[in-house]
Length: 627
Ligand code: ADP
Ligand code: MG
Image 1 (cartoon, protein in one colour):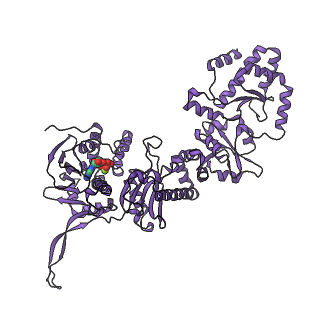
Image 2 (cartoon, helix red, strand yellow):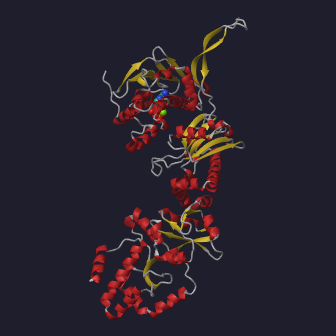
Image 3 (cartoon, protein in one colour):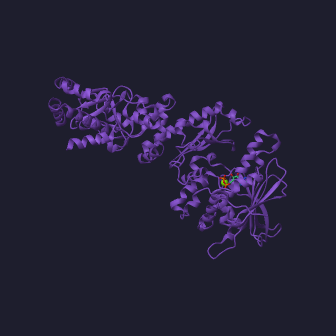
């Protein structure tokens, strides 16, 4: 019979596994048991809606059997089983999300086998300890059983076989011992017991194994006892899901391990949120704020949702309705005995109880994030780096209906503090007569620092929030104000008293120059004004009512063909020597003055970070004027 080949990436992973260091090899048992548990979950779920299954949650079990003579370790389950197609698709290629992430890590660190212990690498990990693996399986609802055999990298075979009951046996032919590696340990009851307790204690189906014990022989005298050995089947795991255990009894490391294992993350969670509610709707929830941004987080591959259980029975793997969009980064489980089990997944979405739980969880998550902000600023800043953008999207999304919930979680970079600050902190620092929360938008903090329009505010020591992400300005527009203070762009800041008047007078005094520049620039600008705010710079550009330049840039990037444009108002600093030069030219050499006007306008575009309409024309002009 022809052997089938593994897909290339599976082969690579296999090589890596086989060569991994010894301490990591033990995790194979966790992987095999997790798969057995998943299979039980699947059939248990099916039993809810399909009476023909005829099984209750209590009927499912996972059995471990070690045969030292044959050197085989067998893990059996009475879960859903696999048909031929499943075997091809599931064991022939690596498709699991955990493995996918693992692959991402390969590149640089391909040799760093440390990652193996932390990733759920699945079924393949069994090859770390086995020279051959046989899978005997029968799928629920099928009459045929199948046998899959593989000795690792050289491929696998699938043949029909006999099996009475539905479920799967994973039979591992354990490798011979070497000088350094005693694989035989994985056939010892004490070692298997230890591993189950270490990695799989929370598995909610009993993991059973026959263990030999000793007892005093019946009738043997107390002073001269005789002993005999006998065997008994023990349940090795405590089966109490971690979220059912009182918080005080669970260590931080247990929570972290549960998280890493269950959600296939290499990093510890940044925050663990435990919720236990008794009342109209009773439920327990164990939620996690991840410590790193999932690599696919901002793509459509990422699916939000919490695992939903009813009394320990998995109902749904990713229940999206339990999480609002703005907290979609949260992972975790919810278990409620009050959910009616007979409803289908579709109906579940409209479940009233589910809505109540979701609403409560939203509040809890907010409270925990605030706590993190107050108690561990550094930690919060790390969280903000990972998921801050999501919260800002949350403010802007759904017509701003979540802005009140989210506004005190926001951070923006402050010009005076030189670090991210909250709106509350900003508001607390404002002088009494400051009516506005000032912001300036630009690509980076460094670039905003150099904006001429921020100069006078910065000179006055006024704090400015720097908006460096596209969503920031939309965020401010949605919020409109915070603690009665309106958001205001530095581009349309209020001008110092008197400055406005002075500017008007200046415009009047130099009227011919302004008329000339307006004429020279034509449609490119809406207006040309004497600036009331410029100090050391000769020119700047401000946007008219409505759209700002940052918004124009945003629309330009997402919808270039629509060509939304902000109105351009050119401001000239009449006290600047450049203005004097312009004024002289208007009188003496109008041709040259025209060139000056174009030059100044282009400089204003550059400072605003807007594209020049005619870059080569501009450089020609500069060179011409240099000659
Ligand atoms: P993952 O568990 O992340 O999907 P694995 O490599 O552990 O990745 O397993 C691959 C797939 O093989 C599983 O998704 C499942 O479909 C199937 N599988 C493995 N073990 C069993 C089992 N005991 N019963 C039924 N299906 C199984
Ligand atoms: Mg698995």
